[in-house]
Image 1 (cartoon, rainbow, N blue to C red):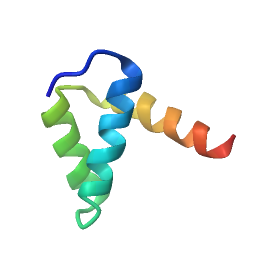
Image 2 (cartoon, helix red, strand yellow):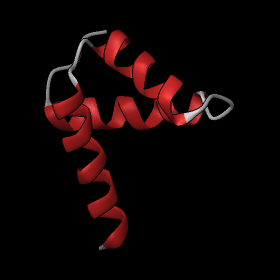
Image 3 (cartoon, helix red, strand yellow):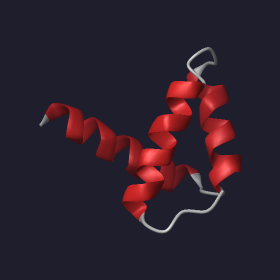
Length: 56
């Protein structure tokens, strides 16, 4: 899956998680890493970014 910016990647991952709510967090994380071709560190940064935006 292609994306142009980090913000776009964050939004795509948010939508992906919404569409796959019936799966466990581990299953979704594996699918995200494979689909978007990102590593665990990047996924952790994105998850931290999303958590931070919810706390604001």
